[in-house]
Length: 298
Length: 271
Image (cartoon, each protein chain N blue to C red):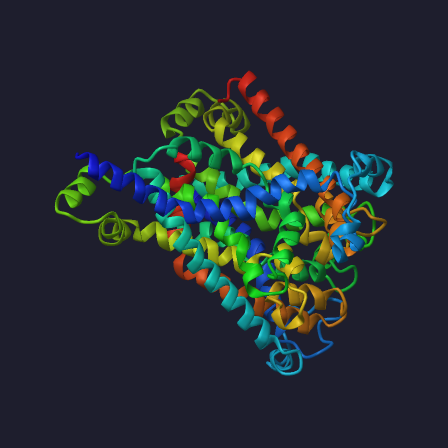
């Protein structure tokens, strides 16, 4: 290839990638970095009106946050969502994937699409539907439970039931996506391996633990990391279903950041929350990676 | 069919029914007369189906406006995202230029940073640019889609270099190669990416909620959320609103699910 051609190729390479790179720099990288700087200022409604009111306050936003009970409530709630929601959703997704992957199943594509459908629905719309579904008096769920002799549960009105209620909705909404990722991995597990274990007399759970799970370990890690990140980013669910209540039991970190930034216009403090949220996600992801490395999954 | 086949298939059918039951109920309640849904036991079907709720929605509630906003924003977001990410993805896969690999590694690392981190500064940045409370402001995040670049690049890697070299020897310019040779090969992944961006921007909530202040500019999810926080009692109207909001994307997905699911299935194995 000629030198002229190489120069032309390099020039075209930059020309084709620079619009996207410029947009990423301007609307993604720059704001993310600015978030850190913003968190060291007292940017509020007065600075919004006149930038001259802006002051550099060092770590004051962080100190104030650590003294704010609602901030700790939000952190605790989000960690609860991560701790309870991640195993629940990963297990739900894996079970669904194993069902759809079963060699005995007929009309596989039909079931696959049906189980994936909630994932593509509009979150706000289905949150509104679920709020009605979970209604104490008129909801379908309590009606179904009444057949089993259960008294009506105040799903969205009691501080202990609100988190499971939202998790039920989030699980319904997202398991289809994880299921598809698991399906791709399950299809690479040789049937003979499972068959050999079955002939050796291994039960369903033993085969799951010793054949299937080791074979799909990297995918299990990927889905867990994605789910943890998703659990930290819950916002529309409490916004629509509970408005953070009852008794602030569903105020998540992101919900807190939104209120801090766009309800009270404490943008400096909100940016500090955003930065702490990022550190949380990063920390949990790194721990998961390390655990996976130690156990030899990746 | 064996007993085993029947039982597994029956189980799958049951799970599928439970999964789509909330969506069926949503449609069913949206066809009920006002007040019919607030009963115990909850009615499953409308006694006499009516479109009255939809008439009210498009009449006095002015949902047509929000529907139009959603269609406009999602369509523009899709077009712009394709325009920005396809050439970039191709360049990162096939064109040799200085700094390419280092830049791409940085992009992959940036994938772990959630977009919400920079939301407050981005709001201030757009305010300075005069884009707050405008369609343009709502579109901005879709220009910076790293995932799309990644997807297109992965797909481009399978294009044989000889094909591009042959076109160069024939005197085709780099732009012509992209348009005439690469784009046709990319057709399936373009459909996948377009569908992905359209669905994501249609369903997006937090950013439009922040950036769109005028009710006239509201997208369907923002309008529905605002209404749901005020009128909790109007179940039938709310369900009709949910149907209008989510049915378009559900139908779009069902029509094109082949592209969406198969790419997700193969893509996640590679990634």
